[in-house]
Length: 223
Image (cartoon, rainbow, N blue to C red; front, side, top):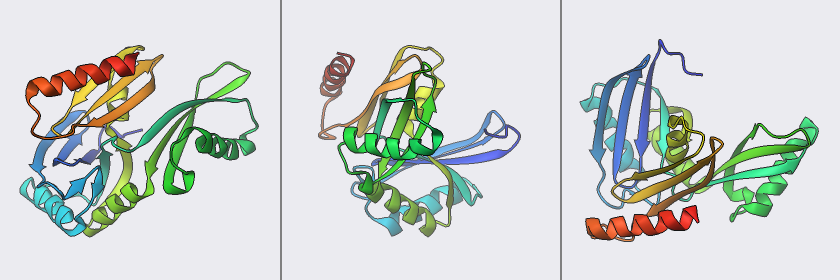
């Protein structure tokens, strides 16, 4: 959907840093990051709204990025994704059926989530969906911070889903390691099946301890 001739600015944040990326067409024009002090963003939730907004302004100013609308990337921590299969239904009944399925399979009540979904190819007799849900407390805090920083989101995307779209293979295992967490995405027929974002229990873990944890969680997820 992106107009390849236009300029787009993306902003990504997690517990450890802010990252800005500017692209025009298919070329990266700017790329920078700014570390965040512990506690400003915690568990994927903006805790200190004014301070994080100030950091965003500082990052944009230092990189001479001028934008009002940004594509926002968010860690997958506490966000939910589920493939689902439903009997084929008339379009006017689909939204209600998806909500019922979300209540059945998601570990949080839909009233506490922003729920998005889309259909994916399926045999004639059934409908297949992919659901994505973000806790309202996370999304609301993020949107409030963006307003404080003078920005509006073009869209909000989850990093694990963005990673899944980069891979061209129909079946793949993706592992992405960051300072405070790591993602595991398993693709089957190009559809993400398990998506897990797992926080490290401590920033004091050694490299070996981190690798052992990643190895263990990867084996568990694949099994």
